[in-house]
Length: 504
Image 1 (cartoon, rainbow, N blue to C red):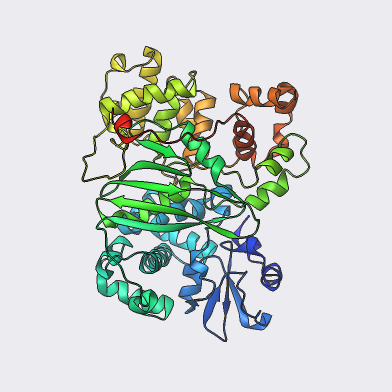
Image 2 (cartoon, rainbow, N blue to C red):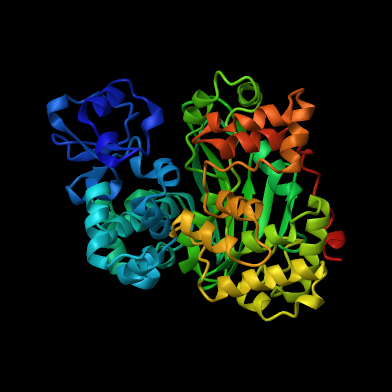
């Protein structure tokens, strides 16, 4: 859905009058008489239509001189689900901005990743989102800073650099402009003891949120050394721009629709400058910007997926923290069981991944970073613990990733990625499409040849050939239909193994 359709004033104002939470994060309402901007569901008295304007992003509202409402915290809502559905230039740019690309590489680096000139990218973002890349990055830094101020005990200098500001002075000035309050006023009288490098935050997600089912999927596919899970939580290592890190996510169900729930995330980072990048990767891992109501409405009358949606409302599409890792794991998992893939991948990690020391993580069982594409590109395929043909495919893919021929950073065009991957030796449609679903957050992927899909359909009493023939009816949410089918086969998350057992 394009920005100008989404921001039709009549439609937007009706959503504001009804305080419709489904539009939180899709647009923002600014009130001229108060100088503030809110989410559509703000509980404050509805302003007169003549006194409001509508914005596609917090940055657009801030550029108009509006401050964030202290009551509804509009900049803390999940992001627009349109970014992943349309995957247009604006959506791809927003994902990279959220990952801190502008902070690390500037507008020029962002534009190069998208394939546009900086001037043209600025024009596109301004037209679609009401603000250019610098303003959008500034809004993201301000929101990260506010969350850190209000939810952690980090010192203000640490927060400034963790949020991506180049100086404490810039941090102070931006917070005052955006929130009409100093960092000290935002924090109030909170205090506490600091843990250097440790940051605990709450990741906002729309409800319903099937956190237990998401946890079951992640736990079923975890790779020893890189990931570990237990009852109600999942943790893994992170290879971030400035150093290693880990994240532990506490996930449960929040099934009441139309609300905002929170996933608690505890990060341990070697460099606090990686905070924004770590948060964005955790958010995409849990599909935080999904609109579960739109997905459920689409399947309401479907005889196959409809009952599954009602059984597990708010099922998410598991994302990833590193696109290259996802692609490598997908190739390893070709034509083998999930258990076999976990074992083989664990051996590859132990042999070629970087081992973390005790200072870099306090979470038992997290011992390695996943091997980089550059490391795997130099491996002799014959030494890998898999059939030689698959080893050659893996090394060839790693070389394409390391050389930039295949880019899986959420800023690339999905169709181009698929075409390029299919041109690599040993990469077929199943692999390319699975990578698009997991690495690029494609919401409309279906795998008709997948044995799990066929087994799930048979288990539900359906003829697989008949159902698969009409899978086009599930567009544009076929990835979620696929997840609902797989979910019928998923075992519950086991309790975590004792620390001494996981270290062996």
